Length: 519
Image (cartoon, rainbow, N blue to C red; front, side, top):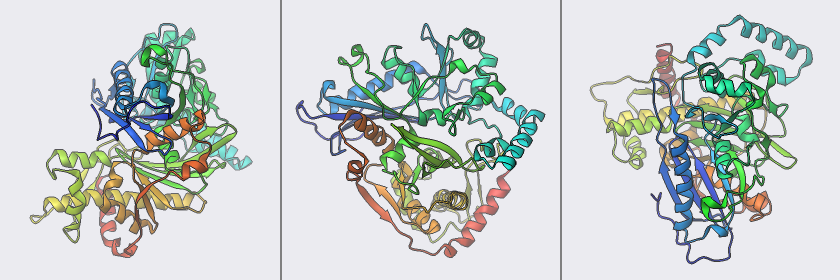
């Protein structure tokens, strides 16, 4: 069903358009963009996750495929266009969700295993306690000391987490005999969501991923820009399962004409956070993108310099276009949008649009603190979600304000880590994602970090970024300078209060966080 009200596209015309599809954790969206980057038609379908066992999170590949094709057809129809008018298709996808399938038959060995899935928890704990990992730490600490090469820094304090693709892929080969047997005969294909969709669109003729998606798996080495043989051997993952890695803005081939009636060119594959960064036109070193959706992500463009992983932050490839490789440093936090959604589900408010006004209707949270912890934390798997400081006078507005404050406080924490560890002057922060529509969170974050924050008119930046990349590859747009001129800023939040005014509330909140650890 359509998502929002698309603009009228009129009768079919010779003008060219690009499609930006965002396959996220909660929805599959498609927007049709014209040369001015205006949305001409849209469609959206909800993603239904499967929970076959406690802690397991899966997606049905055939249902996802049907939704993907459905939103494309619906969006083009809503725009009043024909598929032959589409110059290129750009695909942005949730990261680290993957599937394996038989190379000859194309049949999956299992459902998509989501990035949120916890099935590898025992394997993760076993590895993190192992003597072998301690030996690896010592070896790479010595290598980093002797050479000063930053590529040895990350392995020197390597720890595994349930969010990493590597551990779940290792679990697949240990627990699904058909996949393991096929891998031994070089008949097993591994792919993130983008790879699977590309494979299906081309009826199995194209098997590939791009640098942004590959680097987001944790199995791809950003320094060497290759799949990591050391890690793969360590976890008994055959190197033969990995797809070839291509540029982010690239002609990957065309969708089979049986699918859409004409062969639609596939011109970009990109991971969702990197795509949002491209959509925000964060093209220069120091440009910062803050996404507040289901989770929260801070991304900093570090240009041609790759900053080694430093615990709270990790390096990724932003995009590769021809000879240009742009690196980014990322920090993330869970439970942003889903904490607000939970509050709505238990009737703390009716409409999410009213939360900012509820928070402003009181002078403070009356000492009430909210600690988010619905998802397992990589740093503390036993962190519990909690409200603290409840009183007989606590109202729904106090609870809602506490939830929104927790988002801003965590933004401040992550921003401070970035300033300390990434030695690049930071430019204006550009925000997107559903929670960026909350003016209370945006203003409080601006006050806490003492930086201006821009919010675009269109917050579906992952779709726009994929469309921009596809448009560059198809010739709809000529260069990134042209894309910058298409940016539309809806609101700018500038610091209005001094950090010290928030200090007592933030100190109380941090005390609440400490009490929620190791539950």
